[in-house]
Length: 422
Image (cartoon, rainbow, N blue to C red; front, side, top):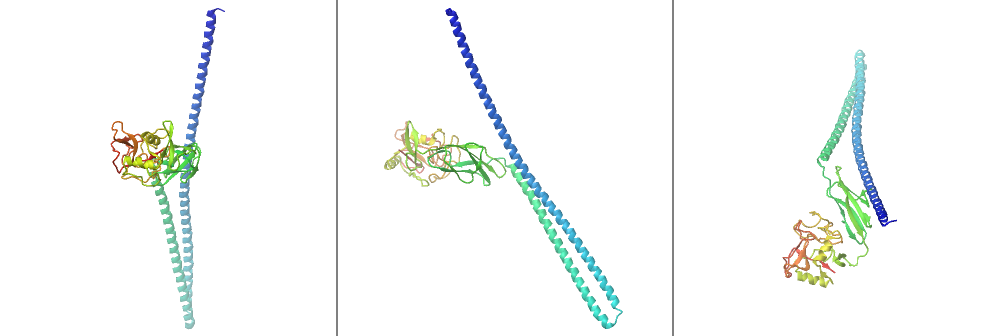
């Protein structure tokens, strides 16, 4: 075989291999597209099933209300029939009493022709009989009137109950039509790393509200008004539903259940620049529900951390603890939420009171509450030190990346505290 033929053969083999590779890639892409299409169809079917279940529930409630109204109307008709029967019975009784009176009068006329002594006794007997009949008629009239009054009262109560039920339904329908806003839901404790088993609970920002959570996926929701024991690394999904049927979307909280806390009490490890730093969970004195220390200079903060066998956190250590593993802008996520941390009030709060103001690694109140001294000097002002995190009134200007340098180390401020690292 000549050299040209060998080269042609080699070129042909290369092209064949290339064509096979392209076909294989195309086949893989087609399979992936089909899988995505199947997932989309399954999701659509699940949404359809949820809608059908909700519609069925609403139809069941409507049928129950209609049945209650029909039963009330039947009771009213029955009471009307009973009243008519009672009235007929009383009329018969009156007719019989009238006949007895007529008979008594005839007897009285016949006795008028008898002897006086007999006539006198007979008349007395007749008068007694007539009085008895009259008393019977009066009692019958009273019983009839009482019966009719009781029936009328019962009918009025039933009618009022029916109208109240219709009015309640109308008000509920009006509220349901006017209120289209879903409630807000939040899970506590928030997503993050924990070293001991936790108890999950979903809270709602409305009074009459039900909350649900589902572990691992959204297929097995369970009520979350009471605490649910949890000790598993993974995702927990949750939502809330208000009294008129508005429902918040599924939200996801990721948890990392660890067992390697090397930092001791109220401090947790944070990776910083290839090393591990133990960062205090709370602002100094690092105790939950304690008043954090303010009115302390940067020099005093350095000394207090050294007395505890630690050092005042650098800006890098502080920001790494605040931003967490996903490097978010706030300790709880990337978008500012006014109620998560103490950033829109008139004074500092006790450490850890804001349950949602927790970073992934376990540090509380790193956004708001108090600015915190660091041991890092400003590059532009070497005689000043950076403070980080914002205070109780800094609102959106309390991000993990926010810092100031206009604080002299020897000065004390009512809005500045600190935390220690090791």
